Length: 208
Length: 208
DNA sequence: CCTACCGATCGGTAGG
DNA sequence: CCTACCGATCGGTAGG
Image 1 (cartoon, rainbow over the protein chains, first blue to last red):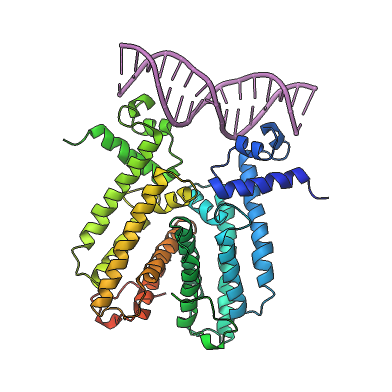
Image 2: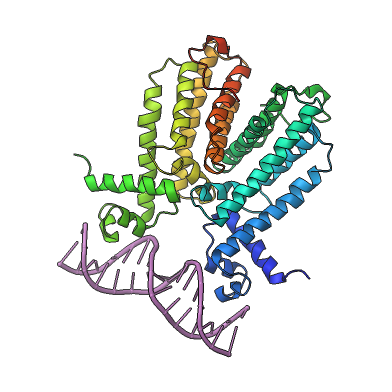
């Protein structure tokens, strides 16, 4: 029971569209056209436009969990896993399985001012993500891979900084060095949090 | 010659509207209503919607230059001025003279994917800003306030990170600690760039 | 899942 | 700066 092939097709097209024009930029008409249905056809699968947008956001989350989080959880808890999560995050922000940028970052800018179920869902999802990263920082601290006085929330705040600056520089400035700079910033964050880089399995890829 | 009072009124209202619903969220009708004109009234002052949006973006830049950059330039070149610029930037991102968030950040997410004069202007303005910050980092380096191996572009990249993470956390998560975290991140950036914090005139405000 | 349609609003213009 | 209007599109629905 694939839930409905058409529904999946709609969400795929919606995800692609959202990454290009933003969630709010999606129009019932444009979405219908991109999936070769009439507008009424869409309403056979969804109740309202908001219902569609929410489903698209959920689909994006599913993909990120599948492609980014799940594989990272196979890494050893602590620094190793934290690094894998950062890499997955960066990879996703580069260009998900999508033409435009990261749907979460662009929709955050659109939604931060508009109360409603869409915003609520995004906040919930992002809080979960920040929480997961924070717990991994704690684990690394407990394992002695990070120094005892590292503040997990501050650490996660700065991880967000690297990713957001990457997204901004890569997409607006079309700056090819953005990825290297983001990795470098993360490396520096690890270093000043008491992580001994000389014990890393792989330290390459950085260098301003 | 105040250029036309009405034009100013339109831009003021447009700026406020843009910060709430985004640049692209502005509608000729909604803008006309918010300034108590008819749509045709707007076209007595502007040629097209894009013309209006561009003028709004220009008005935002003027304000930032006036309120943020200009006063900072009175500070001593180097660290002092860099700190003033960071503070002004953070202050502006908090809530400009505007209800919504920073127009440049939100419009960057909207425009990064849409070629055109609007995007071109934003890129130009942001590149100028990054350049100005970069030159100030260089000055600080030459004055011996930052260590010789600091990379100005990497430094500016990380300043962007702090501001963007602040904007994201404050607006989406409604996180009250966001400002403190951003200042802390900047302080850490200075510290690991060889700046001796003990010589600062004012070091307060940080503390995770 | 389509045809055919709803009232509202979109960006914009003619003419004054 | 307004009235009056343009064709196109918006989100959505009735009825099948």
